[in-house]
Image (cartoon, one colour):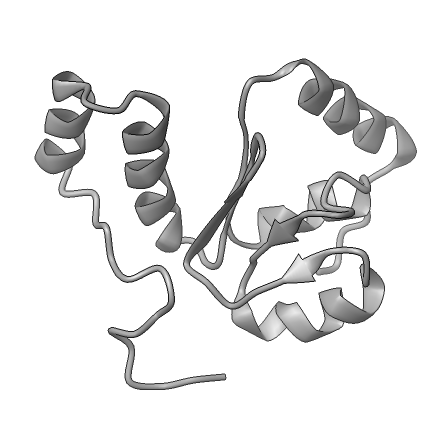
Length: 124
């Protein structure tokens, strides 16, 4: 990524994380909580081409190649379109049995594909 967040931006992200019930980072947006140190000691994912450099930059994070990961209040997705899979599962896990939430996900055609990419015929 070409942009490096400023210390005041990282402080804002840390403050937001401290006061939220759920923190969702999608695709390369995972780099901001990573840079803020919020993924230290957690399992997280991101775009598969970025995982190896992030493993080197943030060895205290367990980086996995998945569509989405939920660890505590941190939710991360592997790519932009995987954000919809993440949101489907966020709704299911945050409000289990919520008919309106599940109906909205179906109405919006939010996918719920295999979290381990087993439906994809290629690998990085």
